[in-house]
Image (cartoon, rainbow, N blue to C red; front, side):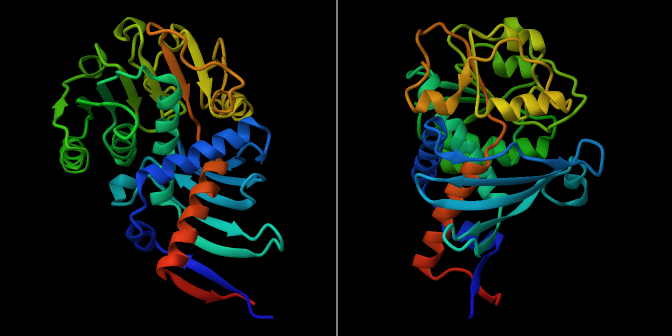
Amino acid sequence: MAHEILYLSYKDVESLNLEPDLIIAAVEDSFRQKGLGLVEMPPKPGIHPRKDSFIHAMPAYLKGSDAAGLKWISGNPENPKRGLPYIAGILILNDPETGFPIAVMDATWLTAYRTAGATAVAAKYLARRESEVLAVLGCGTQGRSNTLMLSKILPIKTVRAYDINERALASYEAFVRERVGIDVIKASSPREAIEGSDVIVTAGLLLKEPNPVIEADWVKPGVSAFPLDYDSYWKSSAIASMDKFYTDDIEQLLYSIKGGWIRPIERISGELGEVVAGKKPGRESEREKIMCMNLGLACHDVAVGKLIYEEARRKGVGTHLSWL
């Protein structure tokens, strides 16, 4: 019996030009399913062939939307020096009925925008509604995608950006001006970017032995903080100063702490999926300082991957490969 797989390259995926609102909705639904116990998703196992590098396997099955798949994703901090992206990988979607693979797609674009979608969902439930000042530390792919997605949820009027790489900062500034319509204030230090900001996104490299700089007294009451780089930028005292600390998956967080990628967290308030599902409170006061450390969930990859697959089929994008 003949069986075909739809192959989608990076350019194929990017050409679909998925609306940010659709991505945010798909990620929010997958958070809700997880909060309701409708997601099968083991902590991502990984191998680490080079210092500060990783290759992770991320499987998930979403019962509510009957979607299954696996992302095979890598990160290597030396890649930008080689002219390669820091993050690269593929996503395989499977037919839950037969188990057969139905699509293989580049996961670089998907990872950037599903991660940003998760930040947007976190902001929807945890940030103050009138948050207008955004600080971004790390102006690469994640810095750009997170700024775009947050602008769909919050009334961002000012962006303060910091990056040690002037070229990355200039590229980020051009992207934000074109896609978001906001001028960027270039900060000369992390502290200058953070002090007085309503929302903080740190999007540096994931380092096992980081040199964190963010102090507790830099962060104002009412802030919402979203560290995409785990605790690489944040001192433990700054994290401990938060009134609430959420994550996307407690089991995965503890797994990462045990593996030495994150320093121990004193107090965990719960999972973001529990907040989305109405099982845990989100923001309860204007002065609460809240951090949500999303580590990246396979259920988001599968949810957005299914969206990409369906849109590609509708538009006739991609290459059909014979498998059986």
